[in-house]
Length: 216
Image 1 (cartoon, rainbow, N blue to C red):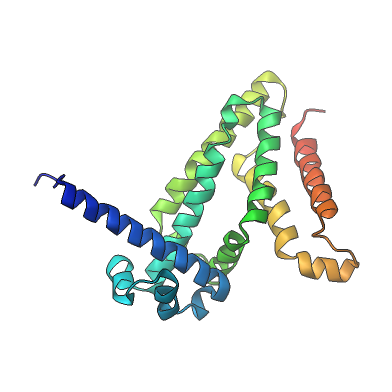
Image 2 (tube, rainbow, N blue to C red):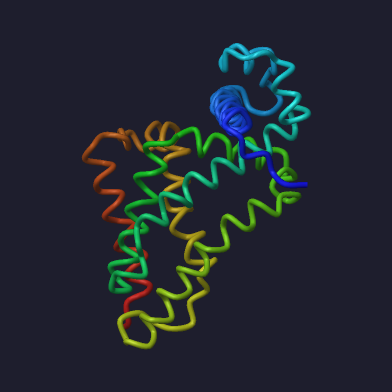
């Protein structure tokens, strides 16, 4: 059957897209604040200013809605990473830019880390069953692998580096610091979230990653 491309049908599709995007944004905020267990569909409907039945129509239940929110969260960060054009840069500069981007993205999107915390509490079962999430993350790994391989060929980066391990290290250096900033500040008696401390952390992360990657 041919797709209905009439103006009315197109407008309905746009309305459906707008409604789903509004629901996802509201659900993101709800899950980030309360986690999967504490989130309530009634509150998500209120945040979205939409009928709760419409949420169930598009997403079926809270579990599938949480999965959709996680997929959207990964889509958002990967789209922003794609704009870095890492393949157009010299390999060391590409790695430096990825470190800087990851740090700043986590700072500007604390809800991303909170959503990941909630997903991990549930053993990532929502992501394990999501082929879309894997498809969204594969291009980043491929890009980083290409950067590393070019750096190896040119002699600007060491060889034998696993791109997944490298990305986990980059993300982990940022994630642990920011997700534990309150406890770390308390036990070390330093405010680790002042502008100066954040700048020092980014410099340290960059030095650690490039210190590992640059040839001796």
